[in-house]
Length: 189
Image (cartoon, rainbow, N blue to C red):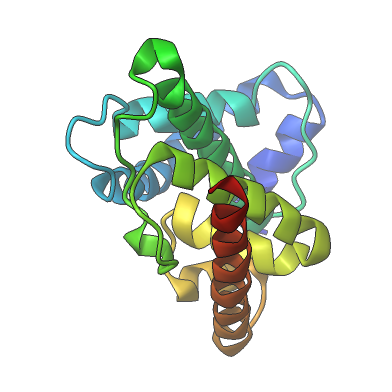
């Protein structure tokens, strides 16, 4: 059992000191993931990697007790937390008060042919939510790769699947999301 898994189990049992032990073990890895993701964002991004890590970490080990099965489960949850934060940030930027969508978001990392607008990030999030209902494992690979910043190999390791399977999931997700997002664009015209 890795140190991270041991500490996650202690947190689950209510050991308050374990939370303090966890951050130094995972901080650098989470910060690298956040920096990687934010480096793909357009210039003028107000959210910094450190802030993204801290906000995600607080969501993960906040006041509600969590049940962590493994290190991989924790990092999957971290990717999901970062996703939620970035989506909320995009929604905030899209709001009329904050410029009504004038800020652009970089979508190239997902390889779905979308423009870089916040509206497109929200459309992607809606499509990804639908994909998660139909194919949760496939959607999880997308979340880990795009929102968590992991490579395909890292995402496969976190999910405990082969790189080849993760690649098939990625390819399926790319086509599925393309179909859904382009269908959504047609509805909104």
